[in-house]
Image 1 (spheres, rainbow, N blue to C red):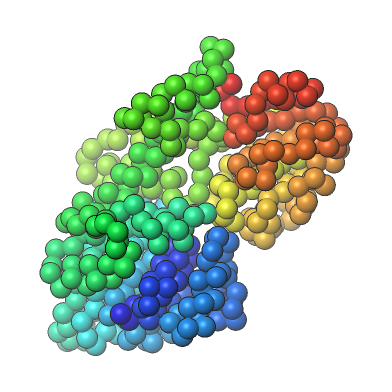
Image 2 (spheres, rainbow, N blue to C red):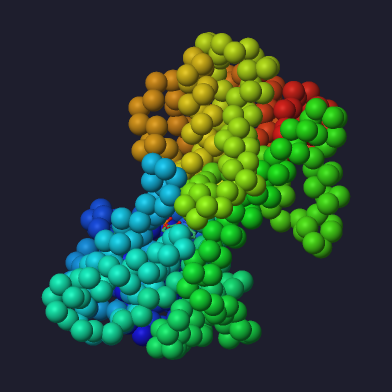
Length: 439
Ligand SMILES: NC(=O)c1ccc[n+]([C@@H]2O[C@H](COP(=O)([O-])OP(=O)(O)OC[C@H]3O[C@@H](n4cnc5c(N)ncnc54)[C@H](O)[C@@H]3O)[C@@H](O)[C@H]2O)c1
C-alpha cells in the first residue's frame, strides 16, 4: 500500500518506519526542514530504541522516504496518516491547528480517493472537524472526490515505541464507512497474524478511548503518589503496600510506582484536554482535576525534601542530578520533573551538575545557558563534590551503582531517590542518608 504520514515526530516516524517494515511504500512529510534534512542524510532526529535500524533498512530497500513537499505527500498515499502534535492551548484544550492545517492541505490537493487517518490524540469531535475542513477545501475548488476519515489513536510508549507498534496490545479503529474500514483492516493485518487485535468502533468512541487510557494511567500514578505521602506520615512503606495490592488481579502491578511525578508529552496534556472536554460538555471530571493537582505538587516533592534537609536557602550548595528525560529510554524532556526540580534548585541559589544517558542535546535546548547548571556526560564525574545525588529518572544504569565510589565522590553521602531505586536499609547500612518517596 502507498502511505503518507504527516508529521515525523515520535509517533509519525515510528508509524512510518513500522509500516514500511511490513512492505508498504511510505512517504513521511514534515514542515520542519531540519528534521527532514537529518532523515534524508541517514540520521534519526530522536532517540528511540531500534528505530535507527528499521529506518536504515527500509530506506535502503527503497520503501521509506522523507519530504517537506506537501504536493508530493498528498499525491503519494491512498492512506494519509495525520500524526502531528496536539499541544495544550492556553485553556488546556488540545490545540488542533496542526491537525486542521494537515487536513486542509489534503483537501486542497487531493485528486482521488483518500483515507485520512487521525493518529494524533484528539478530542471527541475532531474527525468531524477534519471531515469539514477537507469538504470546505474541495468545495472551494468545485471538486467532488470521495474520502473517508478514520480515527486510529496510537498507544505506543516512548522508549519501546517500535516494539509497541510492531506488537500492539490492541488496534483501535473508529470508522463509520465500509471503504475506510476495509483499508484499515488491510493495513493492520500484518500486525495481528497471531490473533485479532482490531477493536472496531464508532469514531467518537475511538477518540475518547485514547484519552480514557491515558487518564486512567495518570490516575494510578497520582493515586500512588498521594498514598506515598501518607505512608511517610504514618510510618508505612509504599513499596510493600504496592506489592500487597498489586497481587490483586483487579489491580495488577503495573503503573503503581510512587515517584516524583509523571511528565512527558502525553499524560499532562491529555489529562488537561480531557478535563477541558468535560467542562465544554457540562460534565466536571473531579477525579481528573485532582490527578492533575496531585501531580503538579508531586513534581515539587524532591525540592521539599532537599529544603528540609539543607534549608530553604540553597546558596553555596551543589547537587548532582541523574536523569533529565521524563522517563528512561527516551530523550524527550517535555514536562519532565527534572525541569521543575532544576529550576527550583537554581532559583534557590544552588548549582547543579546533571547527567542523562541520552537527553543532553535536548537538555541544552531546554535549559540554554542557565546560570549554575552544568550538563556533564559522565555518570560518575557529575557526582564530584556534590552535597547530594538526586535521582529523577529510573534509567537501568542507575539501578546498581558502585556505592563505595559514589560515597567517595559526593561531598556528603546523601541520596534523594525520586524513583525508589534503592533499598532504604541497604543504603543506610552503607552509611548514606537516603530520602526515597513514601518509604
Ligand atoms: N509521543 C508519544 O508517546 C505519543 C503516544 C501516543 C500518541 N501521541 C500523540 O501523537 C501526536 C504526535 O505526537 P508526537 O510526540 O509524535 O509529536 P512531535 O511533536 O514529536 O511531532 C509532531 C511533528 O509534526 C510536525 N508537523 C506539525 N504540523 C505539521 C503539518 N501541517 N504538516 C506536516 N508536519 C507537521 C512537527 O514539525 C513535528 O515534527 C500527538 O497528538 C500526541 O498526543 C504521542
